[in-house]
Every structure is written in structure tokens, then in C-alpha cells.
Image (cartoon, rainbow, N blue to C red; front, side):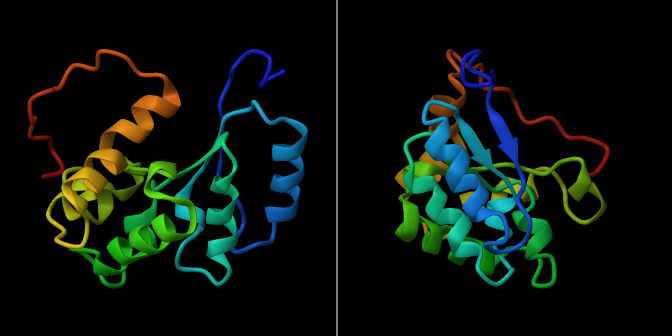
Length: 158
């Protein structure tokens, strides 16, 4: 029904490859169902790369909501998270990765701006990779059109 009505399945999987075989079955059965796998495949857990490999399928994307939470021990500027983005791009392609904030959950540790600023300020990603990861990949996947660029608004968590 989700595939028929073009509803996106946004899902967080258990650590590592625990649920990868089940996801492969869903992907095989429903090749036109758009799937966004969250928390960057539980990147700090063993076997996370298997979740990233699912994005090799045309209908699957990886979103990074929760990546700062998963790398919270190292904290800003989350160099390990940037390295993970680079590693995932090697596995599935930068065009299969998109930013997510995991906000407001992260409000207790970082500001909303910090949830994307670590990518913007990184010298490990090209400007094109940053644009794809932070913007154009999600615009394409979700079918966003004519998005208005909002001005920066200081909020109570900053």
C-alpha cells in the first residue's frame, strides 16, 4: 500500500546487520517503495556498513539524523562523523546520503546549527559533496520543489 500511494518508509534499524536481511527482502519485494534508513545505519556500531550497502538499491537512501548523538563522545566538530560520511560515500555514493538533525532530541547536547555546521565547516568534504549531503539529495528523494531559503533564526537552545 505504501508503494502504491508513494508513501516513504522512514526506518531506523537495529544495530549492525541484525535486520539487513529483512530489509533486503522488503527492497526486493517492493522496488518502487522509497526507503530512508535513519541514524546513518547506526554508524558507531559494528556492522553498520551493511546498512549503508542497502543504499546501493535505487529506492534506498541513508539519512544522518542521530549521527551527532552517535558521535557525542567525541563532540563537535564530530570529525569521526565526517569520516563516516566519507566512508559511506565510498560504499554507496555521496548521492545516496542525506542530512538529518535528529532534532529536538539533540537539543540537550548541541544546537540545531551545530547539527549541520560540522559538515559545512569540514575541510574533508568538497563543496559539491556538502551541497548534495545537506540539500539536493533530500530535495530529490522527497520531491521538494521551490524551497524557500529561510534566514537564520536564533532559537532558545543557542
